[in-house]
Length: 299
Ligand code: GDP
Ligand code: MG
Image 1 (cartoon, rainbow, N blue to C red):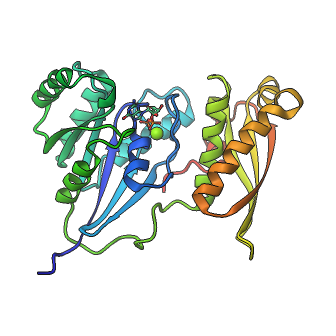
Image 2: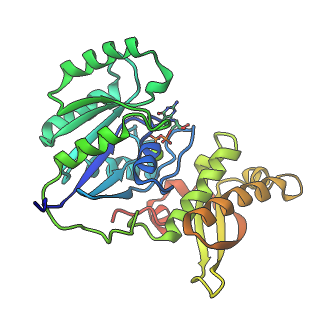
């Protein structure tokens, strides 16, 4: 008998650094969301598309929930609020800790209000002993009527097959929303800007990268030899930050650019010529219109 295919949207929510982007990437099997050991690196809502014989699962990877400190934060927080509405299911991703934190409590309240089926996903189980997980499961089990509670490791991929199967159960029968060879609805250009931002976060000290924005000023079509020419401008808030980003004799910028180029090439399956510039744009975070100029925009 021919089974009907399914399709639907699942939102992955959770506090910053819990592993939302890592999980999205692991499920999609291709690098689309940026991953960083520092919190708040995902600024845009990134959609991952998982294609399986049973159907198509569309994932929303959201910026972490946190208090707004400026216009950019406010904008990011709003994106999170919106992403818990209008979905077929929610994955609440949590650390393997038995105490339910404030961000988790707020998200659980929102999940209850929404009434969407939710799965409690305990991530990073590779870092704890199996017997310690029972307390975590018990604590969360009392907080909500979850469809399921599933321990996973986005890093080692433990439990991911079970998670995909659970997701498919939540999805309605329906036609695919995206072509089956597609893994994200974000233009390559935007993913490349995110990759460059990830490398800034990776290479620089905390206070510098959170004041940076990346704009791709040029992004050529693939030519016959599969080469993409790309020019990026990194905006920072202070002249001193510009010096740090460029580094001694340009060494830091070169390191950042090389790492970014390698990831871009892997992502697009093409050769990339990447040219990077650094400019100072004071206080850009304070003004929302400027934030929107950099492309952080809802839909
Ligand atoms: P996000 O802010 O929720 O999107 O979190 P990220 O996906 O950026 O991950 C934050 C950090 O946690 C990164 O350093 C990841 O490598 C790490 N991480 C994510 N999942 C796991 C996991 O299952 N096990 C371990 N040990 N680390 C993980
Ligand atoms: Mg993230």
